[in-house]
Length: 459
Image (cartoon, rainbow, N blue to C red; front, side, top):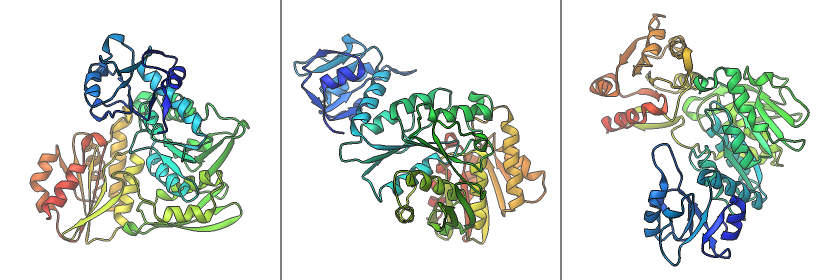
């Protein structure tokens, strides 16, 4: 972050300086008192459980001297303390981020979608880096606090930025794009994640389309036109739409996708009158569309196809997304970050295309699928059965429906465990050298613990 003055902060957030002069400066913004630094602005957020104003003295003990506050009485005492009074610290944080980002004059791409948004964001970042000094979302900071904190990590040296936008209710994307004001938006797909909050897939589409709320004629929306909901999006003429899909009518036509399992994927991309061969060293056939979305968006910022392909050749994905680990002859496909029906099916396909004597899937349940959750789980079970892995293992209450869907086909062997501890007791007997094991489930199930257990047991 470049230095900014208290006077600039005061004006940006509509606050009032309580202590200190407008000429004094900060070079960082922090919301965690345990990480506060002397040159930081500490912003105490008020949540459902904690009011972080109580942690302001802890931040001061670490040397932090500048504070936003909604409570005058909470400001630490000291002659060198600086403070700005605001009515709402969260809104002030967002307002400051919006002002600060605007001063940097960056090319900006925002990415959202039911699944695949983090992978697509990573792809955009690696492509943009080939041409621009680029900033991106740290980890999965994609909400109304994480996006501002990401923005404060940018500085004057940067030329472009890609930001991930998450949501689970109406209005959240609207609020974030108000801060970001992206030049280009990407929607990877519209699935069923958060359907219990948004009512229907049409509601999910409506919420995702908030990404264009501040778009004008100079803006571009890039969409996956192979998605049944996104292909209904009509061009109103107020902004450009680029389509990416598996149909020749798409502006960026993805075809001849080859899933090479752990070796990655390859596909042909027909766009702008030319054919391009694309190879990714990451597994998962779904990443063909994700990478094509990234290429299309970056082309709008002047990145060449050669630069895009070079960026994708060194791509590394964030977190536990289809990473393959091996120990003592057992391959583990770690896809434990999160789960939805489409990503479950894609991961199962990757399992079947990855080498191994036996193919074993260990799946837990999926969250936030609404009233039809049980049927979505059964659908995944039926899909798994059609692929015929050597063994399907399910863990947890919701995953019992995956087991049921698979068992009713009579096509594969299925074992269900009520919890991970029950699985652990038999895990050593179920796995053997030469196996390839997929582990996937909702974030709340912490299936990375199963990955760790497999790797540890084979040491």
